[in-house]
Amino acid sequence: MSVLFDPALRRDLARAALSLAAATPWREVTLVKLADSANRPVSEYYGASVGEALDCVEEAFDRSIGDSLDKLDNSQSVRDRLFDLIMRRFEAMEPHRAAVLAMEQGQDRDPTLIAAAHQRHVRCARWVLALAGLEADGMTGQARAQGLGVIIGQARAAWRGDSAGDFAKTMSSLDKNLRRAEEMFGRWAGFEAKPKADDPATP
Image (cartoon, rainbow, N blue to C red; front, side):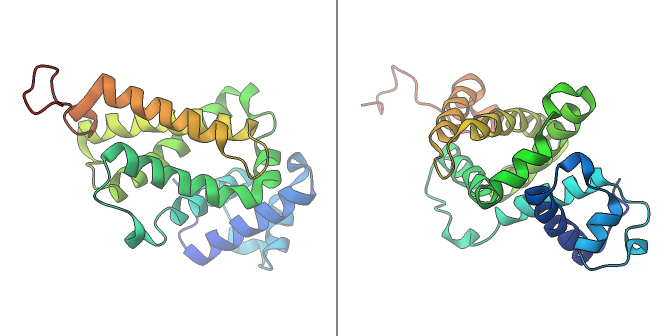
């Protein structure tokens, strides 16, 4: 569990982490350097860690998904709403591409970091599901979040391979995997029911 509960402390730590990661090899970043970059006494970050700075960065990107939620088109299908919400996160990440990639360097070779990254993706998925108006609690909600977390992780891997400012691979991965989830799990995963082939209402 996080030891930092003050939102201002977390925001400042996220900004400091992104600033340092853009200019310094991430392996050289320390809590003291983060506190200095955040213009805060290091004592305010007692009990925190460099790993928690990553959590704060990811949390900031998650929060950005909820900005201007009134612009979300609720007449869209569930799949399209999920697509739009998740793409908001990648759009928030894009200006910080160099810093994010620096922080992720070597992550795919460390099982502990891979597991931590997945948990962040699941946390993001819970938030996305809630914003999309889907159940994100209970056994069904947890299963949805786990599945959507995997889809977000796959889209993130594609994002790393995109050229700066180009989301082609990201969008392709996200669209493909959301469609696959819709086809495989349907209403159980929160998608609309598909009309049967012999349904008279089907064109």
